Length: 115
Image 1 (cartoon, rainbow, N blue to C red):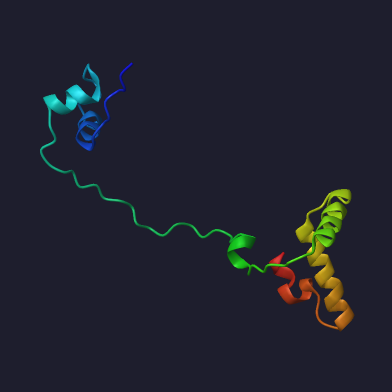
Image 2: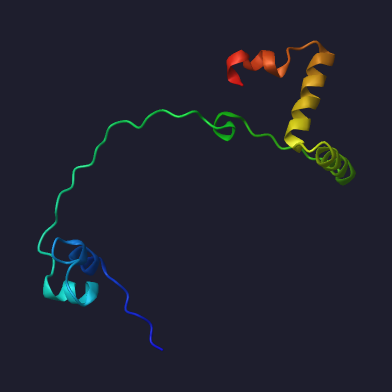
């Protein structure tokens, strides 16, 4: 079975015209029967998009942590048992470290409106 012919830009533009879509025979015959003669200028609305809230990935810094396999496995098992994510447990561990060292908690550092 032969492959269908590839469409080219001229046939797509010709078929999208006012009379092109109603023609019988598809885009190929429309392109041959009525080749495009010029370009149409289309004005786009360039107003600024509405601002949206940034995701955690967009506003946060990434940091890699290298864990030995048994430590990683234990953290993963705890997350599974508590039905939470490893990330949440890491943040909890950082909060405990900050508290132990007398530093401000994550909530205090971020402020009340960040969460």
